[in-house]
Length: 116
Image (cartoon, rainbow, N blue to C red; front, side, top):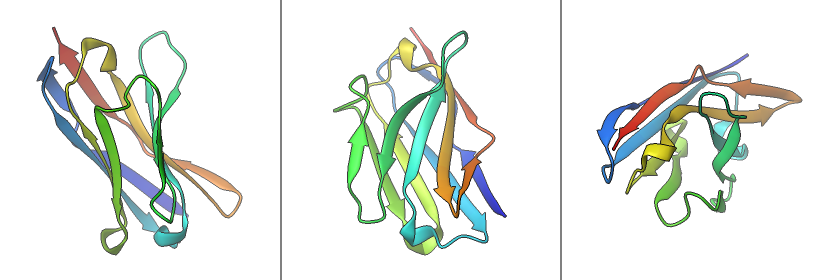
């Protein structure tokens, strides 16, 4: 079994920054998996925000390019999402996710609220 636990969400003013963390534990070889950050705003579908492969390649949703940065620390089994220049439309619950051994694992989510 794999557990993912997000942290770092909160309330921030527009233009501010937050750094989210997602710690993986359990039966997983963290260094070989791709990790993704997703978000879901009220009334909207969950969407991919950013992802990072085992080799460190990254991709981002167009809406966050240039503002968000995903990184990982394999020694700590942790993936990060640095969010800068936050906008009210970034308000959502943010989740991390990985696919491992034919299973899809999600964290419980962390709320990010950006006030205007």
